[in-house]
Length: 299
View 1: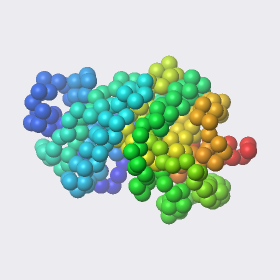
View 2: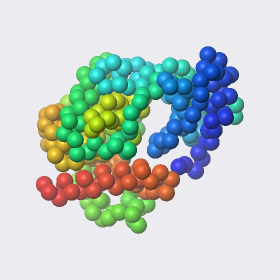
View 3: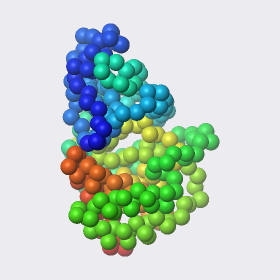
View 4: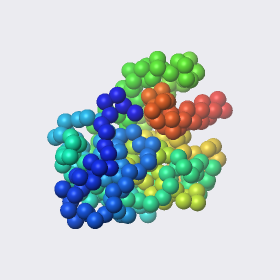
C-alpha cells in the first residue's frame, strides 16, 4: 500500500514472540487479513493480537507513539458497554523487523466492511451511544494539538489540493472542489474539545446482527473538535439511520456540517491513494463522498 512498506512475515512474528515473550511460545501465530493501512496484524493464540507498523520510522518515535496508544486504550477501556482492545505488552525490534511493536487483546466480530450495518437504526443508536461515552471521558484540560483531523478545517487545504489533482480520472473533481470550498469555511462552534475516537470508519467497527459490538484501533483517542466523530455518520450510515444518529446526539446544524467536512477530507484522501493497493478503502471513500454529495444536493 505504501512505496516504502515494510514486510512482516509470520516467521518473523514467531521469532519475535518466542524470543521476547517465552510465555507465549506454545501459542500459534496467524496472519490476519485486514484492510488496515497502518499495521500488519497477527493473532497470538485466541486472545491476543500483535500489531506491526508497515512504514519505516524512528525507533524512539515509534516507541513513544505505541506508549501513547496504549495509554489511550487504557483510558477508553470499560468506559462504554462496547468492547475495545486493551494493551498487553510492548515488543522491541528484532528478527529482521526494525521497530517496536505492540500486543493487545483480540476482539472477535466482523468489521463493518464485511457486514454492512448502514441500514440499521439500532446500529445508529449504538454508534451514538459509543460517541457519548467517549465524550464523557475527562480531557483533564487537554486540547487538540495534532496536525491531522480534529482542529482547523482550513489547515487541510494543501492536502485537499493534492487529492483533487490526483483524482481527476476517478471523481467529479469540479463538483467536489465546490463542496470543499463551502465546507472548509465552517466556523468552529463554541463547545470546547472533547474526547474522540478520531477514526470511525467501517474497518474500525465490529458488528453482529446489525448491532455495534466493539470498536478497534483506539490508539487515537484524544481531545478534538466535537464534530470529528460525526464523520462516522457519513462513513457508516444511510439517510434514515443517519438521522436517528443525529437526533440521539442532538447535533446543531453547524456541528453536523463540520462532521460532514471531516468525513469529506478523509474520504478524498483514501479514494486515489488506495485505488490499486487497497480497493476496499478506496471504495469506502467513494461511498462516503457520494453520501455527502447526495445530502448536499437534497438540502
